[in-house]
Each structure stands twice: as C-alpha cells, then as structure tokens.
Amino acid sequence: MLALDTGLVEEWLSEFKTLPEASISSYATNLKDKSALISSLYKVIQDPQSELLEPVCHQLFEFYRSGEEQLLRFTLQFLPELMWCYLAVSASRDLQSSGCIEALLLGVYNLEIVDKEGHSKVLSFTIPSLSKPSVYHEPSSIGSMALTEGALSQHGLSKVVYSGPHPQREMLTAQNRFEVLTFLLLCYNAALSYMPAVSLQSLCQICSRICVCGYPRQQVRKYKGVNSRIPVSSEFMVQMLTGIYYAFYNGEWDLARKAMDDVLYRAQLELYPEPLLVANAIKASLPQGAMKSSKEGTKCIQVEITPTSSRISRNAVTSMSIRGHRWKRHEQAENGNDATEMGNFIIPEISVTNVSGEKPGNGEKSRALAENDVQHIQGVQETATDPRTDSKCMPEIRRQKSEIQI
Image (cartoon, rainbow, N blue to C red):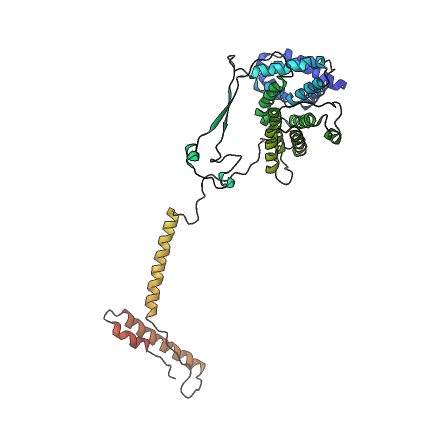
C-alpha cells in the first residue's frame, strides 16, 4: 500500500470515532462519493497481512449495526471481496490471518437473521404463476396451455416459498460455511440497485476466480495466487448468477459475460442442475450485441413487456366514430338526392354546325350558344320543379334534343 492510501484509511478510522451523533446522517450520505477512500479500503481488504485490516473490519461492522441505511450499504459493497479473501485464505489453510474477516461475516449474518426485536426472521418468496404476465415472461410466448381440470383448479394460485428461521453461528466451519455465505450473498443481491460499479466489478471477478481456481481454465484466465480448488454449493452458485445477471445490464457486460461462462463451466463439472438451468436461461435470453447502458442514474434490468390488456382496435366504436358515421350517412344521403335529381336531366346534344356545314362567325356563334343554353336550361328546370308533372312526361324530357340554328 502507498502512504497516501494508508493516510486516507487512518483518517477515515479516526473521523467516525469523533463524529457527533447528529452528523451521522450527513456523513453517511457523503461517504459513498469518496471514491479514493473506497479504493484504499479495497487494497486493505485484499492484503491479509495489512495492519489496518482488523480496525477496518471492526469499523465496517460498526457501520452495519448503526441502523443507518447508508452506512449499512457502504459495508455491503465490500461483501464480495470479503468473501473471496476468506475463501482464498481458507483454501490455503491459513485461518489465523482471516480471523477478523470471519468475525465480520459472522457479525453481519447474525444481525440479518433476526429482526429489531431479536426474533428469528422467516423470509418469504412468491413464485408468480405462468398464466399471468410478469417482467420475466409473457403467457402468449409460452404457447397454448391445456386447460385441464387440474390446471383450472390451480389457476391464479401463487406458490410461496419460505426461508428460515436460520440458526445463530459462532464460527464458520466446513459444514456451515456456504450456508452462511449463501445467505450473505442473498442479502447483497437484495441491495444490488444501490451498489456502485466498483462493487459489481468485484462481484464478477470473484465469481470467476472461485469457479476456475484449481481447474485447467485458471491457466486461460491467468489467475495467480490460489491454485487449489475452492468447493462451492449449488445454492451459492445460483446467488452468484443473480448478481451476474444484474451486472449484465448495468455497464459491466464484458466482466459479467466472462463470469457467467466460468460459473457455467464449474456447474458442468459439478453436475449441479440448478446453476445449469439458471445459467443457460440467462445465456439464452441475452441480446446478440453488448448492452451499452449508463452507469449513472437509476439501475434496472431492461426487459420488453407486452401490454397486458388488448389494444383498442382502429375499428372500435367510440363517440367520435359514431359522430363521424352520422356525418358520413348525412353526406351520402345528400349526394344520393343530388344524383337522383340529376338523373332526371339529360345533357342535350349540341350541334355546332348548320346543315350546310358552314362555320359561323365567332361573334354570331357565341351569341347563339348563350341564347339557346339559357332557354334550354330554363325549360328543363320548369319541367322538373312543376309538382303537377307526372311520370308520363319523363320520356319526353329524355327524348328532347336541342340544335343550334344559325
């Protein structure tokens, strides 16, 4: 560690001890923006022989049990790195150098399994029905579902899964190690939306390291330091995949892709069905190209949701469509009446030449046309508007023929 990093960590350790209780809230709000301090704390955790490791773990535990939400999340962001350091030391069988990290993990675990009154927590998870849409699926994309009597009896019923109560732990052993770590990773995943980018990067990196250490792929990844295999449980790998899936859509595509491939590689070697199912499902749902999402602002998993209610058809009957339909019928009725009235009139045939075929002069021609047209139109209108005119007169109008006499 550099002297600058050591100075930042020592100042952070002394600052909180002298902080008045009224200033804790503002202090916690500004703490997440100190990127230089966070980077220095990562360096302390990654060095098991550091003299600052024990006071740092103690202060992180004080943050967690302070009851301040911002301080609790500040401790949670280091949880993946703390897990990796503990597992790496356990694999080397040098448990003495990981005592403070083990105490911090046990302290966080024992705080999370009880409520404020000290009673054991029982966590519940509701599994949505496939017949109803959710952010993960659409019933229409699954295909036709046979409506049997058994399916109808269970339609709309949601299944609830319970976890707990979890027992208190005083020390980590080979038997309960991954039971504790799986629960801690579950608590970390519950606060994923509040984790900074550096924490998501740490999560993806430790997932890759845990899954490939001691296997041939470690040479491909060029990981150094731990060469022995680290045992993992199926439940722990499922929790790792939950965090990796979130990292895909929040700016860490490359690291998340590498971590998912390594988890899938280890699940195939261990023949764990649950991680294989989750990893392959995530892989099949990923888009073809890398997602370029902003690391700032609200973080979320991007999904495409089809509207649950059917869209209004263009031919739907609304007040506007009824009003427009009335207008159309009114216009059609007027046009029909006009056509009926005009159907009784026959356009006369006009001869522009006399019998001898001589062409008249321009002045005489225009004058004769005007006089004859006016007389003809007046005669037709009088015939059509006369109420005493019956149908017997209509053939005479149709046979009427007008010639221009010069």
